[in-house]
Length: 308
Image (cartoon, rainbow, N blue to C red):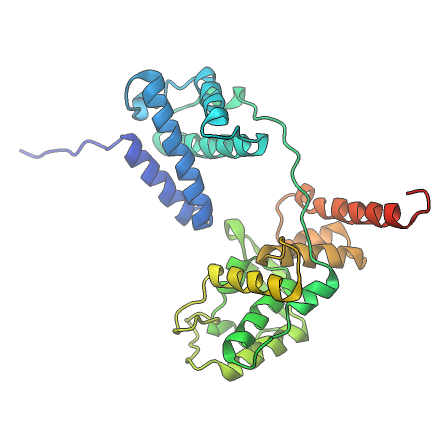
């Protein structure tokens, strides 16, 4: 007598399948996936108290707009501090992603999704470094291969406007760097980015000193013990440079991408070209950099005008 396994539709199984999808199919960063899954666990905890039972797929399919609003109200007041509108919006974004995954995978429908509106938030402006500060962090401060590596990574971040994950995804097979490189970013979207001579010089200086063999299918940038360099190590390097050079707190790896965008826009690049270089799906995302330029201009005007 054969036995047919019953599909596991428990909340834990649903969450695990969703997390795997976020990593493998949507290719979200590990940190983003962890944040999303934290919100889904909070939803499970809330609904267990709210409904008096642990939700599974069948019970979740009965989720109403009122239930979601009650969850968001609970999240806003959870803990010692009231959550900001931005944090509540992030929680709602995570729950939307989870429910849409369930719709696509398990043929259920959540009519409540079209009835929920998150709180209004004003997206913060990108915080670039000044051109002088951006160039300062590109200079190795010690004569060893790790300092040369850090300078090369920072140069790629600023000169090409890449995300840190895109830089660390480079392999030995990408060397020598061409004059124009195809970069695969978020959502597996490919874009074309020029490679300036200063980038090839910085990476070449690192490769001349690195004590490990760089293979075609191995990481281009190596950690101290020879493994792949991680984003945390780059973050710590920028943190150290903040203290050494007196840089602002927002001097992070991603701030170098913001600096790339802001500086070439100020130099005369048009928005469509910048959108292509950054790999943004929406032009509205790229338009934030015009707001940065305007804000900087207004600050300079207020400081210089005799009536300011």
